[in-house]
Length: 280
View (cartoon, rainbow, N blue to C red):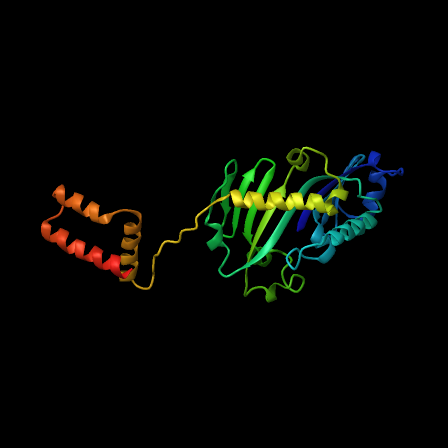
């Protein structure tokens, strides 16, 4: 369920005395540093020290399992992942503030994911946008809903190959639905700590929000009965779809009354519409 998590821990949150700026850089691969700031990585986790504040951000499931598509973490595994990260940084993250939470699930579909994503039309209060064909966003200032083709994402990733096992996945269609809480405190109205992440009640609350937001999306369920097996079939099923949406016989009579068509044309067209109506 959990993917990217952002932890923020202050030295004052700890029971013991520790200087982040002195001790943390020794444990990570440093990318940049200054007198009061260090940025680096511990495997897939981005580690940043700003004076007396430690910021840890990255995929919790990738940290524990190496990927985020094979399975979901159980509550016990969430705690195991946090303990493993704490030991690697030599600091307890139990009392850290959680600033960001991503929850996501993968769904194996019959068809390629964009066929389903294009039917997700509108969500009140959110800005809808497409990033290429493989990705759909519903964006709000502190919340992001994301649908995307997981196999395409893995294929485009720098980490493809033996490490991800992408070769075994190319023949299936996987749609990922991800909900990102970009400002956890504002959304939940309270400070969320690391220990909440393996609390069953809090996790059920997250799942409720994940499900509720999906259900609120306005969707297109009706499938046009258009056939593409030949030009004639395409033309006649388009006419049938128009007949489904409006009364073409009334429109035909209107055109005749307005003298736009002759009686012979009206008769011929009426016979065609009756045939299409009967057959399709």
